[in-house]
Length: 94
Image: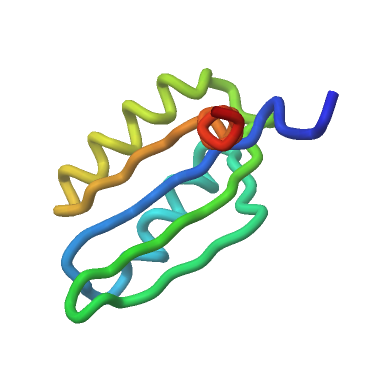
């Protein structure tokens, strides 16, 4: 195993406001997801964040996490997408 079996990439995009990082990372902590790497920036007034996470200790499957994060994002006025890291690796093999 190459260590990517339980890794995902999470993207967050939306209008900048105070507390986005705190709100999103709290949801991940509550799901027992560990953030391995994080990058965030502002593009004018648009907040963008990309995280590489380890969900190996999570009690739910990645589909449920993705659904929960997407729904929470809608409530917060954000687009939150969760994708298994293998999706990105496969894109680079084509």
